[in-house]
Amino acid sequence: MAIVRRMAICAVGEMAPGSTRAFSYGPATKGIAYNRDGVIKAYVNRCTHMGGPVALHGGDKFRCGWHGADFDPCTGAALAGQAPSGTFLKPIEVIEENGQLFAVLELPEDPFA
Image 1: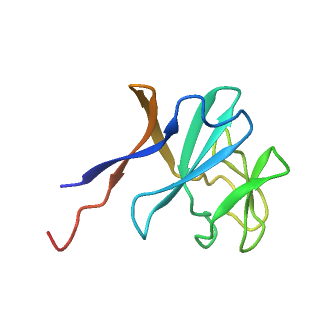
Image 2: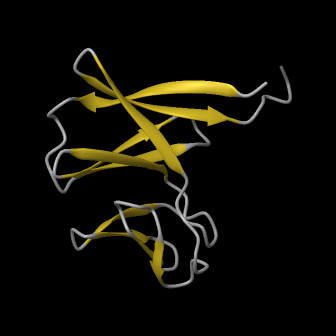
């Protein structure tokens, strides 16, 4: 059975348009949220090439810090670089509850449970 985790990102209004916010589901799974004119998108922060972390670059794209692959922060689509064409950063659902933004991610089943 998969594990569904909910992680606080920030309060509504705390993330300015054009900015990002990092969050974590523990030591192994990191996330990145992006505010595009009030629409919050979130992804697993793992490049589709070799799993490196991405960060906002030039205000309009995510760039992998390991090999320079670029991704669209609104869709997660690979744009350029060594990320395979047609790949996407894994999206994470974002919900608003009581003035707080949460990332909701289904994690693989715990093999040790």
